[in-house]
Length: 122
Image (tube, rainbow, N blue to C red; front, side, top):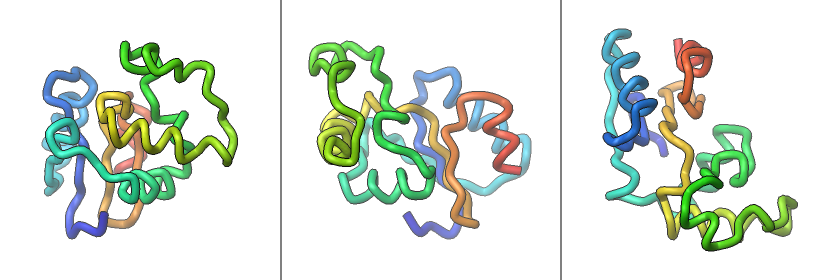
C-alpha cells in the first residue's frame, strides 16, 4: 500500500470508476491504476485498506452483486468476530469490493463514488 503516488483501484466497466479517473486527470494528479479484478488484493491488503478507510469490510461490500446473494451475505453477522469472513470473501470475489477506491500519498483513502468523496481528495 505504500506507493509514491496516488493509486486507484479501478474497474474500467464502472461509470463511477471512470468518473474518478477523469477527476484525477482534471486535477493533474499523478497516479497508478490497479485493475483490482485482474489483480485482486490479498486479505492483508484488504485489512490495510480498511484501516486507511476507517471502515469495516461490510461497509465496502457490494451486497447487491449476484455472488453476494449466492453467499447469503445479507445474513452474515457484522461484528468483530465476523470481520475475517467478510475479508476472505472480498479477497476471493473482488467484484464484491465497492469501487473505486482512491489512495493518496498522504495516507488517506476514500471510496470515490460521488463528487463529495472526490472533493475529499483535494
